[in-house]
Image (cartoon, helix red, strand yellow):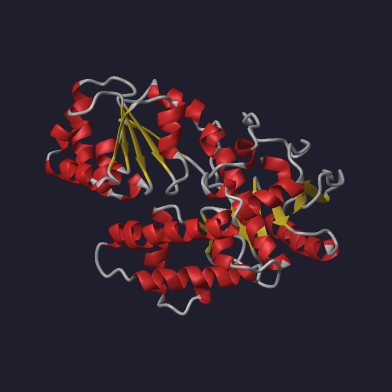
Length: 387
């Protein structure tokens, strides 16, 4: 079962709990934050603000609410009661003992000014990503980024299968496709009608969110990355919605490299959500979108867990096709086949020229790594390189 899988964030959380009085874990709703803290860090004192009675009590008297529970204490979905942050601040300032509070949220704490000020200098903040392929298959975590000459730990077929399920602990272990669809339908209902409504407070229209999701799914089914130009919505209003969706980790924004001409694009926080929004398409273009999501999330999780900043951007020239990311000034393009290698290499070589890069890579469905020529050129990396 999903809860039996060790999460790679555990080691980092234990270190944070020995250093900071408050440890925060944020991430996509139902990605496993509470399960990890309760079952794997074995913290028994727990309260969730998804419970209306507890939420009411936390709003009414935050200090009393905290005093009712023993420490260390997990407070789940704490962003729903912002007054708790000031109450926690007062307590830890009086007695700065590491590991007193473990707080979780399905929203970015740093986006709320009052919350950010209460936590500054008192919290070790971590992000839990959806479950990676290595976590799902109970492999040990990588302790550093793999070298580009390293052999992959997983086959490309394994990564392809993982891309259709995604990394959310519940749906990834469901075998009945109708149950998976029911899960995502319910997940989106909660996110759209409750979580995003809290972010907006006023002038929020759930139907606008649904329209954005449908448009993103349609664009991704064609193998493209959504930009503002794909939507028939006022750009300022659209940005407000996308930024709110970023705040709850539903989507992430990817910017274009400064030497390119592309606009911001968005991907979903999990490939399982992308699969649901794309629908029943099994085309190569839809598969490309799912693999993009999976590789973005797998590599982001790896970088987050080993403590490396994720500063990747995509690249697009005025006439060339998209290159998925630029990593340490090396352009890399995700492909679903090497049958049109010459065509894909042209896009890479254009990016290499614009970036003054000696090498570039195709990331392909293969288990064989191909290094670029010593004089420079294009190599091939397997999909399973970073899992």
